[in-house]
Image (tube, rainbow, N blue to C red; front, side, top):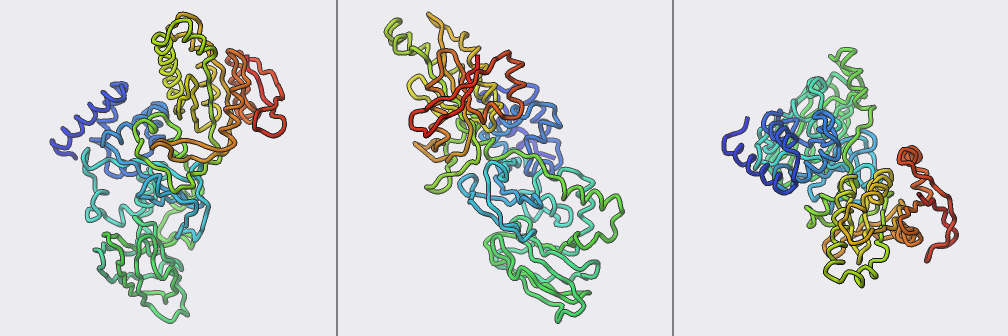
Length: 483
């Protein structure tokens, strides 16, 4: 399945991963074995969440593993906009930078807002340097076998039985060279609706079959991401479909039965499987989960934010911490020793924040700003940090003040790094500023997050409600002081 040279290259890259990330040896060994032995289709748009489930490791371990593997050239990250109706994966080759605020699903004929929090998925494909799979070469692909895998990620589509079912819907297919043309002559009499499809571009044209139509012939022109015309009506029976490739890429094109008009030749059980597939919402790794991870910040500094307006997040949780009395510490123990202690404190916070899936956005003097994809991870990290700070070797006890808040924000590129701006960030910083020594202060959205009360009880923390005025924030802000 892989040549000796490819295996050697993979082994060297896995060794580089071990040196870089200090991964568990068993996890890395299992990962390498999977990359060598898994079927080609399982290594195309691979979901780390699915991988974690199958290989019985945590989601955080799998996400970090995949990000390090991408940095090592073993995997390639695929950023895709996910249609909110059919959950198709609309590939964005430009990565995070290419994500726009709106997208269009040609299959569903639906324009929708793009949210990096919810409907931008990050999947991973094995890189050619690590192992060659048929999805690296369009000539090696079989449309009937592979068209559905092209259209989704493995978080959505990983069942071989379903792949076999969807093969039965294909009427005809071919591959077009750039600026080339072909003619397909399928017999379209099994149903009343079909699709002309170029899966790699998520381009669809709707073919309606009607006895009173005037023709059985049409010419489709294929551009990047679009087929023109996008809807035609033809007589049933043998039709003549001309396809002209107007793009600079090789494209696979096929004609597929639209299941909404029925599934001829499928058993009742197969029909139910197909309906279940289209009606179930997948769970996948979102762009927000990736962008707020420590590994992404450290290993993908070149990944830029789209446009000067930045990237809008509906909800990011921010943790701010400040080392109380650090100025006096410098005076008491001297600059060199104090700086050493502060650096040890930064290392501890970085490790704990990364452990809970967050990332250190920046340090400011002896203060830390961190981001998390969800509030519970940030809250648990804050509690662990407040209890583990005593581990830092110091001439005297170190005391932290911590604030946690969540809300919408804008991500921008600042000094070639991902940074965040907006009222949410300002409020989170102000909440930290009113914390007493050794205290965690959280806002109402954090306190009311699902699972927060259970976590506080399990950690034996007592929340004390308070209402405070915060500098630069209008009105009274409800907060909870944890002790």
